[in-house]
Image (cartoon, rainbow, N blue to C red; front, side, top):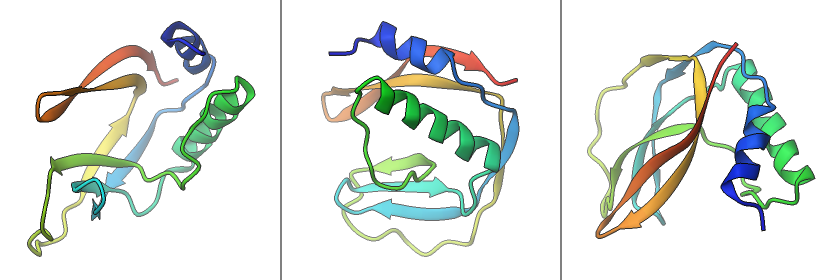
Length: 121
């Protein structure tokens, strides 16, 4: 079993270049009842970084979700019906680092705790 310290070492050895991404599409994970804001196009630097992390996890024998990566920001949980139709939104976001985040179920929700942070170069 890999512990968080091992995971921190895996993340720390990766190189993320600073980049800009554009949050420009609204989506929904129906089964999870989550509304999210995501990207139509993942910047090349971020896609390369994600692949480096997947390769490091695989090499270390750590399972990961094999589904295609969908970079997103969760807007709303427990969305039981389709969201209203809204005008498109575009938000530019400077990617200047990354965190290893643990999600913890609490009461009726989830809390996210950063357990490691690395600056982008």
